[in-house]
Length: 486
Image 1 (spheres, one colour):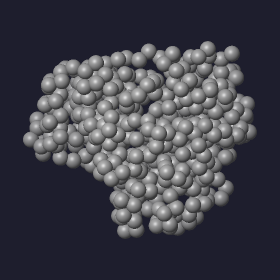
Image 2: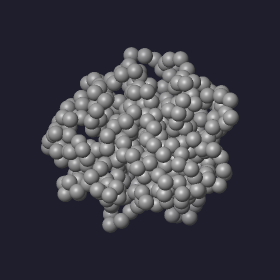
Image 3: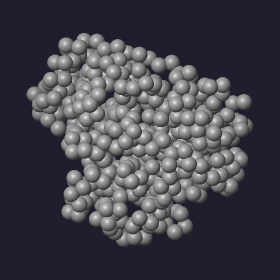
Image 4: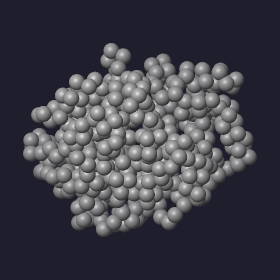
């Protein structure tokens, strides 16, 4: 008999409720409800509309109920680092800050005054990013933290809204730069240094924890029975990597979406001085594996260009942008996509143009040239990350799995293969939702192991294999890329 599961997959640009069906060793996904997401701007600050997102989840649950299928369970995964503060009654204490809000700069300075960077990395193994939870909390007014009863990370907050059980699942907790992957606990040293109350943070739980039934009032409102709520990998990248259809060794994974997250699945944390200096991070994956990876800018650049061009009266879908890029000449202008100017929203094309002017390169001549510049620069960024990763682990990577929404960007995938000079295997697309569902199936005993889950993925989806081309041209471009300023 087929078994059905629901995955609420919250991304920084959009969210969706997905129906997963496991049947005869294969899995299918169906999108029941999709909704936009993005920062809310008010008085110069950036927030998330969490109430609005939960209303969208409830709308999706009603669509699921209308299908009249026997659904086993539900889980939510989300982007990392951001959090919800709740009061004594379990109600949200607004605002729910957006990680791109400028207040994090003050948080960085506040943390620096209390604890040094080598100590933070030694405790957490997480790369420095000003948006990390540790810096966000250091930017909070102390009275607001003192008045909060509970802190939950975004995906775990949604699991709490659904079940009434407050837990921070470790894959998401590991993004905070407050979790110690060696001890498997919150970092007591950092909590003490920053005057953080451990009781503020909802207890930790491993991926695949069964939290309990869907709250009765929510089930009634949606028209569903009280299906089980499970904490899968609450971090969307953790879920995505759990579904990578890899086998054997010497493979790396790129989760391609708003962010590009490249790394390897490793049996233990790699918390070393070279890892710290190279900016690598140790996030927790399914089965307490470590995702040794680097977070870099991804399709955020494309998303922001699209938003700007809509304001100017030009609306493109991704396929149209790729067609325009294909018509532009290759490797004319390059940017460092991880430069600080590109992390904040608003008029991304002008930021790219400014970088090109400052570095003596031609400003992209049209929208297709802007896209080509972004895609080529991202591919060269992947090359730089992979080279550093190989030095860190002492192994050569022989193939790259690209998963997530960006796996559909075939031009970018080809550029990645060209730049890295190894085969790229693209797909599946909805890997975060897929991993979310597979972990639910393992938690409920419907699949025996993680290896079996990955075999299900291989049996269910056709992967596109892209072979590298134009090695000399891309080697020359890489030499130019390495000289670009930050």
